[in-house]
Amino acid sequence: MNIRFATIDDAETIAKNSILLAKESEGLKVTYDEALKGVKGILTDPIKGFYLVAEEDGNIVGELMITYEWSDWRGKYIWWIQSAYVDKIWRKKGIFKKLVDEIKKLAKEKNIDIIRLYVYNHNKNAMKVYEKIGMKKGYTVYEFI
Image (cartoon, rainbow, N blue to C red; front, side, top):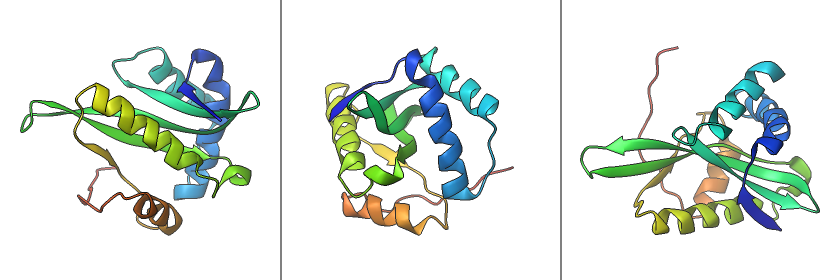
């Protein structure tokens, strides 16, 4: 298993996974063109964030995206885990935990103290995974749509 930063060459695979993630986690239909545009937006502009991918035998089997929030209370960044996806046949094999462990290592190197994620209210399976790896419930998020 290789955990690495995603490159522009990974954009199509990540976009396809993003479509699956949107449908599975929130019941949303996202088009390939929308997903590819969004993925390329991160991969070509590091100010927005970055992706890590888990790779086995040259195939991406999992991924997550990190975006940044500036904390005026702390005077430093908070990292947000987003778009976390593991291929169905690779689930329950520790892929997500390996990705998160790498994020935690990178965060420590960058003096990032807090890593957060948000989860759709009805995505109970994801919540179980997050709790299993030691994450704690924090804020409730509200939004305008």
